[in-house]
Amino acid sequence: MSIFVGNLSYEVTQADLNSVFAEYGSVKRVHIPTDRETGRMRGFAFVEMETAAEETSAIEALDGAEWYGREMKVNQAKPRENNRDNGPSNNNYSKRY
Image 1 (cartoon, one colour):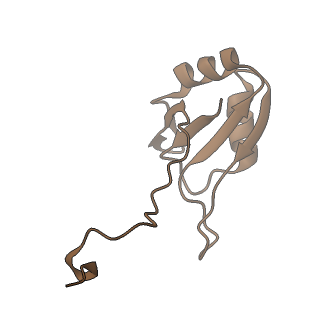
Image 2: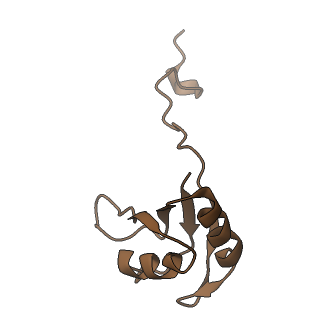
């Protein structure tokens, strides 16, 4: 299981997240995605902890908490969806007559 942490300040670092989540157990991994073009943080992160119980505890304690002047959104990460449609387009421009 992984934890999704959203609505983060762009100033947050991996060390910051590690420190906050370590209060609820052992942090295995922190991943902060960055924008491909700018290299800037995208405002969310993923945290993995040693046990599901630790992750549940962190989610319950931190969801809605104010940090760096923002209200964090903390919940169980959902599997990534493939939003890229490689099939035919549904717009009128792709129709052949």
